[in-house]
Length: 181
Image (cartoon, rainbow, N blue to C red; front, side, top):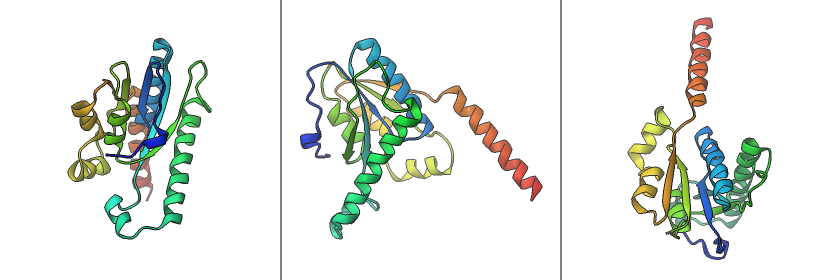
């Protein structure tokens, strides 16, 4: 379990908590979460969970505080970049409390979304590609973890149709590069 401690959001009002990685899928979920927060008049809590490179176990075996600070700074910058990409900064018309937490994403999100009135918004994640297949072999999906363990409502946002268009465009570019070579 992650130690959220003093970073924990202690708001009495409604919250919409959304997992953010910076991927197109998570940006789609972030947009949906902002809309849900507006509708519910809730606080939007974009959360980026991170773990040390090589995992917690590896870090505990060979701790390096300067590296840990650098990774935290990178995670902070990644969440800020995701908000910039999605909204050009913080979304307008909704209170936002961005949060960067050290821990596994599924555990962090389900621990934060601990009230019956909370809504946890997550993307389906990358469904195909070598990276997604390898990730599924090595660890449980964040989506599955949240669906199995969340105490709050969970909204799973499918990829935008734009994702498939971009993927098709990318495949077309790859094919043209192969033909040109």
